[in-house]
Length: 217
Image 1: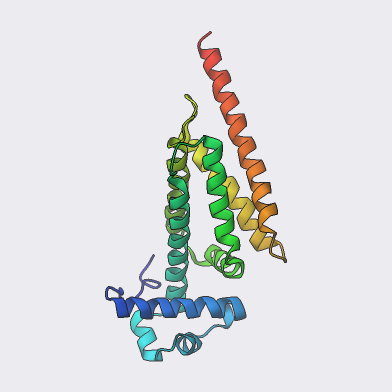
Image 2: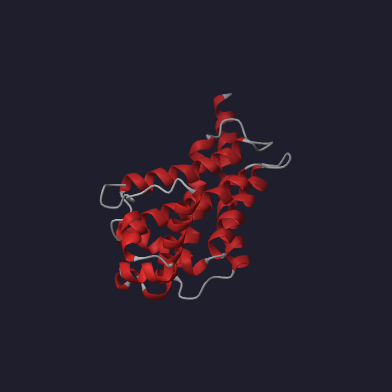
């Protein structure tokens, strides 16, 4: 995040944090209703219930609010996936994958209008470094879920597999929101994503097993 979009004030106290969140919530509401180009700083201040001067104390401009808001929403979604990555008991890799798919897809569709607007905006304003950082965090959560499974196959690279699995899940769910005019049905989308990534995991496991057989002669 560069100096143009970095917030002016870090909300360390509870009241300051609540003000920052109110500003970000107002931004998301207006983003969904009006679109990014039509939002003004004055409108954001009015919806957030703060003075325009107070708004500028926290953020230098609309792009700064957008960047911080997107990051906050990504962190919130990462927390949902982090909870799904930690099983309450033993589970297979396929069960772990299904849990991650459920968390990711339902987390997005639970606030579909907001995520549609934010994901579209993210592609416009996020720097490559910022995008890679948050992407690696989500891949890491899939990796955590995989290595905790009870039947992870020897010879299958969990990090590579986590990257591929998350990429598939994120692409299918994200494009369903961005491209389809009507919000997809949650049950159908979960089933479609599971079909794709569970099939990938099974194929990867078979390939790893075949490779071990070849190496053994």
